[in-house]
Length: 103
Ligand code: HEC
Image (tube, rainbow, N blue to C red):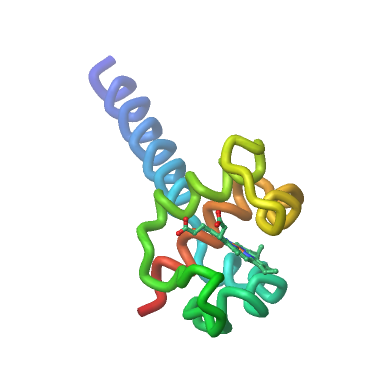
């Protein structure tokens, strides 16, 4: 009985850590999704044009929250609303991980 409980607990711990990994995002997968972002936000997340914000080094949670707000329309911007429309939750987590990993 004790052993069964331990097995269940360690399975739950494994699942929980897998969820954390997903929420944190995969920076390499995120990078692959940023080709269309680079024109405005820079290849390394540092924008060349004063109207476009830098994304490099920004907090991942903030980036993900903003992208979800652009996607839902809660944050309105004529450029970013259509950009975020096609992104899945996983894409957003990965992109956020990528930009936050840049200096
Ligand atoms: C045509 C130019 C353009 C492209 C392409 C573009 N963006 Fe943006 N992005 C902007 C502008 C301009 C803003 C500022 C919006 C505002 O003022 O609310 C912005 C804002 C953002 C923000 C919020 C930054 C902050 O500090 O709040 C994020 C995150 C972001 N963009 C991510 C992306 C991602 C990811 C892509 C690619 C999928 C992308 N952008 C493509 C122009 C662009």
